[in-house]
Length: 621
Image: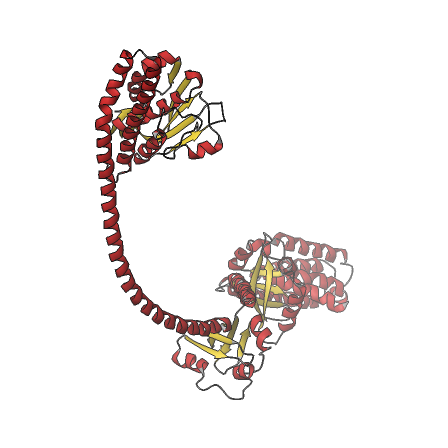
């Protein structure tokens, strides 16, 4: 109990936490009132009375220095005046008065000393180059704090004053270690810890402190938040890098200059075992001596990357890429990346064998090539000779057909011209029938000769087409005019559905022959000589598609396949010699010479036929 009673006034004196001077005077007046109440006693026999006088005097001297001494003197004089009013005053009363003045002077001096210490400490805190504060040991409150420390945590200096340190420093274990290290008379205490700012964010500090006395610790801080964040990021990156290295199928190691390992990834450990505490040649080769020469030593000596291959006792071959670098702590290290290349080496050996075989085969091929060159020269000569013979034969064939056609046409022409006149003059029916048969055969022979000559001309390699833009509808109309009389006599209808303006690039004469042959072929196979012929055309991109559809006897699938063969007749039962069977063949030759296609379609016998062909379509000019 007693130490606490003494401790409270002492703290009060050191803290200087008083009200205004008027309150001290009130305390003095209160003491005088108590003195008046006790005036019935002698001053020297009542210690309580003098204590009531000495306490205000001491407080006034400590708090207000010179003004406090004056206040104590006034209080003492008042007390002396009251004592002097008593009958028979004791002269010894002057001694307590003198003691009271002396006590006020002494406490004034003590106040000066305490104030100077407080100012010195405050200045030391304020002028510190970094964050600083004074910490009370017993109650753990902040007594003073400079602006740098307050701004770092988002407070003001006034808000930090008398604030419990646990409010901003919640880590009890760190606080206990710091107070233990900062014992009076001890060395400087330093800890790395985290404090909480006003916004709840954590700040890393290096907190150092030293006891100024038994109650106060002078503290300084260094903000290392960015350093800690950087360190955490680097550690995270390091862990991430090591994790990536652990997932690599190739082995990766960090090796020191003394042949020991600083790091080995999982592939290395699974293949060669844990290298911790062992040398590289012990781990890799189970040897007690370094390799000669040691490639790792050369990397450190030359300080340049190197690459080499080595064979392990397990029969596998590894390709190693080594790179020197300096670690963050200044230690020279070597990064090794080892890739298993056993299959590649085996493949290279196999390829060498294959390459040898290929070289032998190439030599054989060179011999065969030289022999083949000689054979090719002989074949070229033979081909040229045979080509010349074929061209000669073709020329002879064309000349023969031309001459034969001329020789046949010459006697047939007057026969064809004379037969109608002879028939008109002959009255004998039997002889007339014979003449009609002869006339039909003469006409058939003339058509056969003309068609044969036309087909031979189309088969010639030297024929040249006179291509020009032609209106397809107009060219068809020009051909249809030749059939106007026969269509009327046979009750045949022709529908020209070709749209106006559809232009093709073609030879006018040959295009007319195509239309003429297709129309004549359709008329020939009309049942009872009557029916309908419909001609349509459409343009698709750069192609004109033309179809000639009739209502004739139709064709079977077998007949469709043979329709364009030379001398083939769809109606094999007809032997009236109306056609030599070359019309569709000539059409095919003409269309193909124009770069188009031609084909036949039919739903079946008795359902008509359709001949379709294509030509190059162009824009009308």
